[in-house]
Length: 431
Image (cartoon, rainbow, N blue to C red; front, top):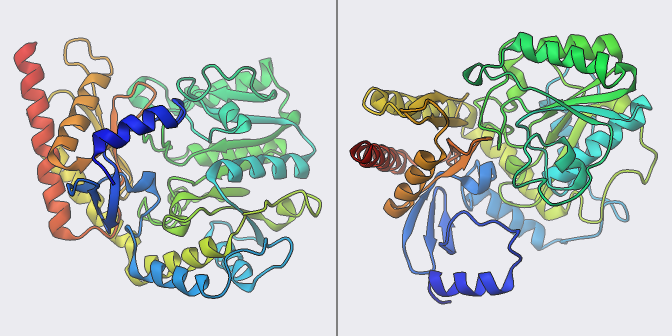
């Protein structure tokens, strides 16, 4: 198979530069929260494919379900010859997604597709064109996904004009000087200055911003948005693509807010590593599109559907919502225990096991992407895979499988602490 460096050279020659790769280690096999590369080196995975394998790499129940489906059929296209497990999974999601009203579901392949279809559905249901999103948001790399995303580089740079009738308002982050009141005031100003709310089909928002820095929607903000939407006949879309399926300690992060969105997008953790995404929402809204207006050749592929049924079973049987709370609390406690010794730590946050640590420069008080990247690099040297995020790239996010074994988790915490302390000592010595 070759060494990492050799494959990296081939990758550079063969694959488009726009496909960014965060490490130069090439996976050979994986199990639960551990990955072994082609050279036999072991790594603890605190990325989980970006919150995809919440149930761990190759969970036995997921693998068993996929193997059973492989022995039956792999593809018919549900729009040509449908299958019962697609219907059953829709029934399960209609029950699980927040909202005390009748719901319906459509399956697609990726999170970006789910967002695209949610916007299509909202426009069909309201007869309106405009959509409001937030700064720092991430909703995908398709053209509508890019338009909705509130971060220019690397997602929008160089790709030309974005779709029209997409507007952004500041996301409320107290740490960066934007209050809930200021965000709501900006939305009101938007409606007065740029777009008539009677033209707005939907407001889309992540309950916890993913790429934007793992900032949680403040308490009460969703209720205020719900009131704004109800006042103007606007649909509220919750993008639960990264927050869904036990990651935040709830099946869906919206459960923390006591507010039901009209539409919910989901993907990532839904099928434990197999491509599957969905939009679930009010039945009357979901039925707005004409037959043939929704779907896709691979949407709701039977392999992904089978995996998703197993994932939902595992979350319930292994009580992964409770497990996420336990792991997140342990992680945050460990980080808090070193905060006094590491003044670069500006914040530690996140619900359940969707956690982050943010670093600032101690001299300027400004975000420090250099510190975050140094910690990520040092951790990788020690065998711990971490991801950064944030508009300023100064945040490290933690997305280990929720099924991680206690001894492996303890080992990861030790590696993480050592990495942070070493980088602090080196930066302090050079200051």
